[in-house]
Structures are given as structure tokens and as C-alpha cells.
Image (cartoon, rainbow, N blue to C red; front, top):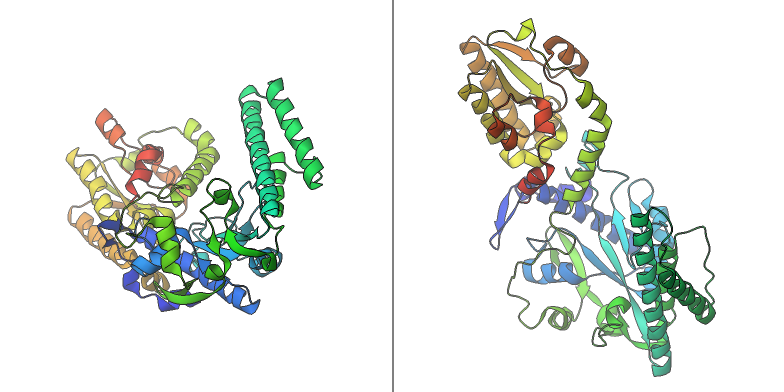
Length: 472
């Protein structure tokens, strides 16, 4: 069991209302996995004498809530320039198989001027991996923002800002060229756009000495150049620190370097979070003097962050099973005459996503078929949740097991035959001739149409509607 998981009590994972905002069980597991990632980052930084501090919403959450802002779902970390450079050099070796670090240097498709850490290679529903990730199947980790030094010499400052603005312009031109190329199915034909981009690159190469190559995407190289320009000023030649992408637009977005170089630890959920000693001044500068008054604001990346990951999973599953969906012959066999209770196996992700409402949704599905006097009752069998180890790990599992046993008794009293399909799916399809795939949500659209509901109707129900239901 990981260090953070051992400190978090079971009740933490329960659905909770904080400051009028409901935080669901899935998000609680994501929060816990984020805490684990920061705890590991903290161990790494201490071992290498690298300082970091809570930034942006995480700083506000630490001071105002003693943890996450209820309607936020990520962790923002800041580092001063010299610490950030050492962090980029040393962290990849520490990461191993447990973490990945994304930035323009490690991924040629990455075009952001900060780093993002995630706790694995892909989202996983494997029980051992879930245990390592505090029961969270999604990729979770902090964003790490560099705060670089502003030259004390005004002429040098103007030079840095001028080159950064030119780099920004080249990035904008490059992105527009890429956009048009994709829409036109080839190289962008707008000669004025291409000429402006070529001229901007020649200027940058002349002023900075940076050599653009053909082995990495241009937008990625420009982000690397941007970061290198930000690094030009050493700490001893500066009095202020800044996030340059903000400073080029607003000269007030800077802090005396001692504000960010000295930290104190404050409680953050079940760990201690380093924050700048003068956090009050920083929060007032960013959020205003009334920052202690909670105001619900949506996260810039969309809440919850894992909706996109779930969408990607759905797309991969659909792609893998498309041929099955197209060729499956739906028929009623002799096995299905009379009343038959079909206790159907479900995927782990269904229980994780719908855990707070799983039993209610199961009952809704059964009621749907009862009302129509259908021959089949559908239910989800939590086959992989019935070991003693799983009972202790998942709050929903004991409830699901109890519900399962009660339904078995109920079906027996009603003289229903029980066809348990929780084993070999190929055998299940062959025997029953009716259903295949993972169980899912009852599709309102299908129900209104009045047609027979098959499992593929569940699977292929409106993804946007399903995702909207997990926005606790």
C-alpha cells in the first residue's frame, strides 16, 4: 500500500458536499492519487534539495480550504528557475515506470511552457495498479510551472521580452499553418502566412542563434526556444521572478524573488503542502483581497479532467468491437423461453464511475424489464469484486455482493431460471445468442423508441449523456 493511502481514512472516499459543491467518490479517488503523486515528488525534491511550492488554485485551496478547492481536480506546483532546470534534468530517471513527465523536451508533440507529471503509462483497471493509485484508474499528477528571473538591467529585460513576443508570434503563425494544413489535407497554401512564418523563423534564428531542424515539429521547437530564452537571467542578476507567459502581457505579474524562495508547510488534506511564506500577498495579487470567500469557478481544462480519458477509452472500445457490432446476429434461442434471470458480468470501470449510484441503476434496469413483462432481467455481476481483498478495498463491493445474493433468492422464489454469464463470454454468447459486451447504462433514447434493449444499446448509448452524469 502506498504511503498516502495509509494516511487516508475510508470515509474520505465517500461522496461529500463541500461549500455547496458535491464531490463524488470517483473524484475523491482521483484526489487521493494526486496526493500520492505530490508526496512522491516531495520525496524526490527533498533528496535533491529542490524546492517547490503550491501555486495558482492549489495555493488558494491550501490556504482557504486546507486541501483541494471542491470544484477543482488538479494540483499546481511552482518552482523557481534554477530548481526547475535541475528538476527537468533529474526527474526522468526517478520516474521509471511509475511516472511520466511531459514537457517540450521529453515529448516532441508537447507544446506547453510547463511540465505535466502523470502516474503511469495508461489508465488502468487492473486491481494491483488500482491499489497503487488509491483506487483511481485515471492518469493523475501535478502541473509544474517554472518561475524564471527577470533581469535587473532594464535593457536586458526589454531584450528578453521582445524576443519572447517574437517567439509567441511565430508559435501563433505555426499553429495557424498547422490548422490550415489539416483542413486542406496538405501543406497550407496561403503564401502570405508561410512567408510571414519563414521571416519570423529567420529573425529568431539570427537574434538567438537557435538552429531549427526538421526532426521535431516546429511548434515544439518554438516552445523549447521560449523556455531557453526565459532561462537567460541567473538568480544573482535579478530581484523578481515571474511566469513569463503572463509577464509579457501584464508587467504587474511579478514577485520579489524572496517571496518564492522561502516556504512554510501548511495542511493539505492528509499531507503537508509547501507554500510561499508571503502567501497572503501572492493570493491577494492573483485573486483579490477577498480571496477567502469561496466562489465556484470552472476549471480551465474542464471538470472533471477524466471525462476526456473516458471518452478516449470509449473510442478505443468502439473501434475494437466495431466489426462485432456490425456482424452480430441477434436472435432468440430456445434457452430464452419462459422467465430467465440473466446475471451479467460488468467491467471494473462501470463500478468505478457509477459506484455511488450503481445499485440504484441496477434496480432501474430490472424494473424496466419487469414493467414490460420481458422474459429477461438484466443485472451486473461484480465478478472481480467478490474476493476478501476487494471487499476491504472497495466500499461499493460489499453492497453489491449483498444485492447480488438477495436477487438470487428473489429470482429463485419467482421460479426464474438463473443463467449466470459472469464467466467465459464466448460461451455466454454461444449459449444465450442474445447479448455480448460489457453491461452499461440503460439508454433513455432506446427506451423511448420502444424497441428491445440489447447490451450493445447500453454500450453505444450517448457518451455525452453518460459523461454528464459523472460530473458530480
